[in-house]
Image (cartoon, rainbow, N blue to C red; front, side):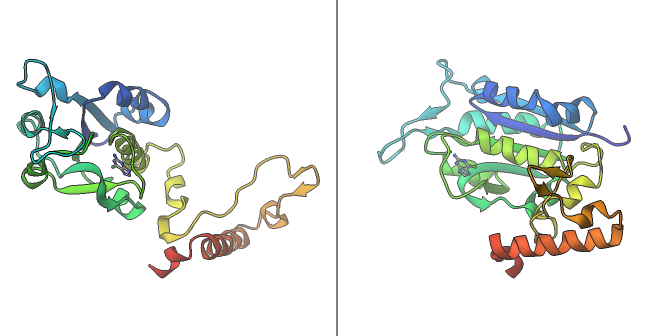
Amino acid sequence: MNSIPMRIDIITCLPKLLESFFAHSILQRAQQGGYVDVVVHDLRDYTADKHRRVDDYPFGGGAGMVMQIQPIATCIRALQAERTYDEIIYMTPDGERLNQKTTNSLSLRQNLIILCGHYKGVDERVRELFITKEISIGDYVLSGGELAACVLSDAIIRLLPGVLNDETSALTDSFQDNLLAPPVYTRPAEFEGLRVPDILLSGHEAKIDEWRYEQALTRTRTRRPDLLEE
Ligand code: 6GU
């Protein structure tokens, strides 16, 4: 290990949902390898309410419950007493849509808080007082911000140097350079008459790179022309 692990604190009313996600695969290895510390906080541990409630009816009436400011404020302030946070992120469908540029930039930060929204969302004053960034993972509504927090954390953590076995592999992902990734093949070289493109078997590195770049361009042009316009 050569540097301080990145720290991600996730605040949620469904801690179990997140714990199982981080207990597996690359995310588990990233934590065991000392690249990241993910700490999940149960909002109910921070409420002053004797029934451990973290939500209440909306002022002015209407459907759905609203997450109260008190437990969130208490939790965030307890965390801020321990370290300085670069961003306090609120996962919400009305946030800015997540893309690779944002995950790249967040992967360079040291300490992050991610707050998961639920029900009809959080009391607006939470956003005013604490939140520095609001992120959505797409134009559809999830039942809670937990899955979105997992998506965001995964996208960030895999970019931390050393987390992926092959360090160059995150650099050739789709969306780095605003291009989709080119097609890939592995053995066998022929399956039911379908052959791998000859160029990939040629051993000619420069030609292969060129082919991949052209494939990436074609694929982006046909599937996601919007990426080329950016
Ligand atoms: Cl961040 N939260 C919820 N509840 N739904 C979403 C989302 C977030 N992003 C897309 N849909």
